[in-house]
Length: 62
Image 1 (cartoon, rainbow, N blue to C red):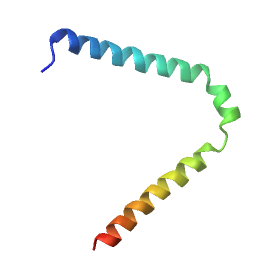
Image 2 (cartoon, rainbow, N blue to C red):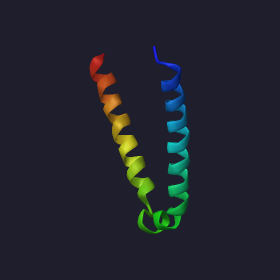
Image 3 (tube, rainbow, N blue to C red):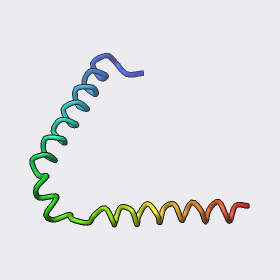
C-alpha cells in the first residue's frame, strides 16, 4: 500500500513531531500553570456533557 520510503518518512515525522511537542510543552510548563489554572474543570464538564449525550442517545434508542 505504501512504499518503504513513505513508511520511513512517516515514522521519522511522527518521532520528530512527538519529540518537538514534548520539548515545547516542557519549556512552557510554567506558563501553563499560571494561565491555565483550573482548566481541568472545563475538561471534566466537557466529558460529562459528552457522556450525557451518549446517555440520551442510548435512552431514546430503546
